[in-house]
Image (cartoon, rainbow over all chains, first blue to last red; front, top):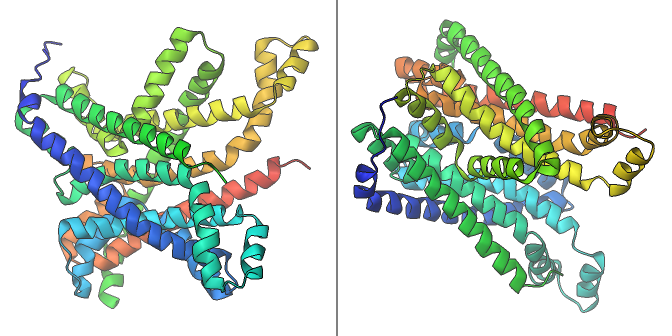
Length: 219
Length: 217
């Protein structure tokens, strides 16, 4: 074998790795936020009355969920300029990840909307709320609480997906790890530390979400 | 458009080759991953605690790490330990390990969701452990397993694109090479995206047909 572990290079580059981790979390959070808006629209469309709306939502979900994220990322970054839309690395990646998460969240919200008891909608109608008001103030809060666990696991997988940003040179954790790897060839150390960072972050997020779920009682 | 068709026709060997490579990467890692997953799932439910601990650690590490990191680690790490893997082998190793952890969790969940009475009844009529597992529990688990298993297959086809990063000549890397030659960026990325869509759609439909076959009648 003849390979001795030496973590010195990795520790010397710790700030870059940590900032990479933070950038990954920011990318995931931004995409989750935009994806939630897309997913809410898609979710309401897919349980709505308009057949065109249901068709649009179903097509969007089928197309995006069956296309690899890497292809979407590369398409938005390298092919959109052909159509005259030139986005910088980070906005381009956030757009791609938002579109991607929007499809998954459409499914999450669709499932969530179907679990909202009918009586609530009827109660809303009987006190004279409009359909928009019922959607916004009656159905959405209950649905959002019910989908909280699914929302949390979506965030965790989005955070893991931010590693793909490394392929278009966004300096997040995987990009930094790869840089250290090729500069120093401390292969084992670099990837062990990088993956430990990811695992720790994922488990911390999961633990925090469990806390949030406990604070809001399930409807 | 004509230019694109001409270029696509010129590149047909590369595209078909890449497509086959993508299919063989996905199929190999799904088969290996399913075998690993069945083993891990059974150990997670019935294993002695040291074995459970090992499997739990494996599953948590694999599921907490992005696939891209696993692929890169599988590509770089074995070399320093004097194990030489081709990019294809390293990539399939990473995907199979990733797939195995996900399927292990699926199987654990499916087995634990079967009512205890089933196991007790099977024991009461004198079945051995393997009899209980093979003849009573697994056939029931298959029904609840099938939809998430099909989802995992789709995820594996999508994850196979990550092997382009370590230089395996699958569909995405071939597409990038073609684009590098003719600069028809949008057209060829759309073509690649469309091909992935077709593969995954076919898997989904096959899964649905299979579900109907094993459904309660």
